[in-house]
Image 1 (cartoon, helix red, strand yellow):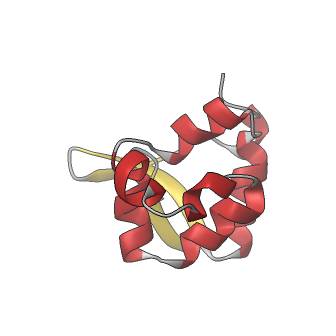
Image 2 (image 1 turned 90 degrees about the vertical axis):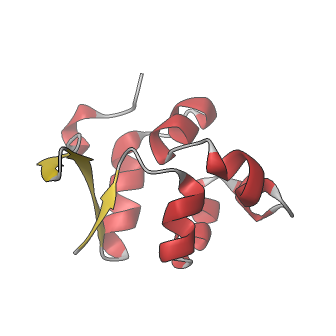
Length: 92
């Protein structure tokens, strides 16, 4: 599994892993494909921020990304920690 920093900006994640754009679109983040959106809002927004804004269940995002070979982690102080688990549900 490829670990994604849960705190990383969407633009940075999509630059490293372009397939994330399709995953996000499939999950309901359709605006990500609008011209300029990734380069502007994507430089400020994280996936959890977008999930909260679009009212998308966190466990749905985790499952979709896992199917594509990704998992979320919090990366702080050069150590990788476990991100929110799928059982925790939506971000509030």
